[in-house]
Image 1 (cartoon, rainbow, N blue to C red):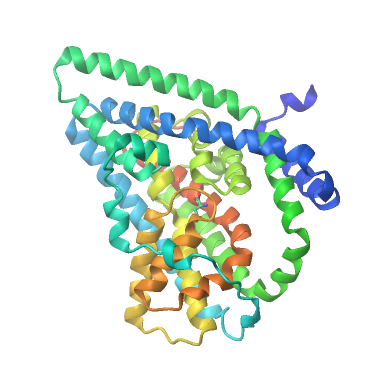
Image 2: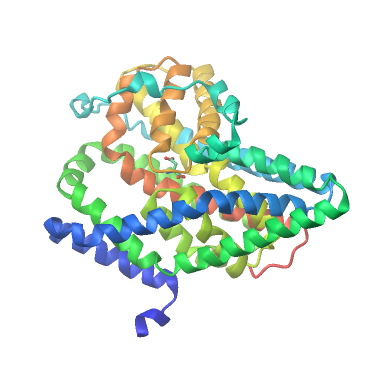
Length: 406
Ligand code: ASP
């Protein structure tokens, strides 16, 4: 009983520790607990599309006028681009100083099946944003397309005659309320879900991880240090000086979604918890969160952007390819676009690296080099993606003169 009264993030933390121990020592019994993770992830995925749809539509209609929508849109997108570029620059700087790829044993490279089919081009990212068929986009979980449609739909609700406008606005507000109540219900099971997910991952990778970590250690360290600088220096400074808010108090408020992002490696699956924490713990209004957070979970991925850049440069270093300044600039731009195009699901960033490699003519097989350690880095970069979204919501709310709890 006492356990249930404990704050959610402590419950999650305990679940994480127990999961690591369980996964490591009871590898053969993992099926007894893995189902909890499966159920939890399915429940989160179940609510993502209706949640995104209703939250963006209700967010856009609540802005009232196109002027408000435009202002908030410009602020949000500017924040996303600026922070992603700052993240990429941090990664680029460190990868050039540490040079983790110099002298790495190529024997670790793994063969990647079907690489040619997964490669996409930069223009694809934008083309896919406009759905040919909205229902198909929902079935396939093409979130970028769903967001695009929801923004337009919400905007045009405000342009129809008052009696329709009221009905539709009320309807989507009501759906959103229900989705949030459902979210709160699912969130209660987070510790169990995370226990199941993490125990399974640990059991699967335990023996392999140690040996790979040894040879890929410097590369992993470069990514981790760069991500940490972005998370604990750059973003807090922006939150403090541009947002005039308390970054570390906000960080504590975000403990549950950050741990969930870490455990699930999915910004989209974490979105319900992110909305809950930013709204209820840090006090950002529903008007801001319902617009910025679903958008951020899909297009604002600072961690992924940084990772894309470091990984591409690492591959170049391993293959002994000198990157000119122009080529590095191209890596920066494509890393930004790849992070926008990456879906908020596990290992999406890994697939997007092929976009960069193609753009700067690096060998595609390079992906095989970083495959083994991608999952573990994915956990950390996903948390940074979510952390940046939440800081963005706080900064934008403050700029709109909202009174927050941070
Ligand atoms: N897993 C990340 C996310 O959901 C995306 C990536 O693979 O970088 O935010």
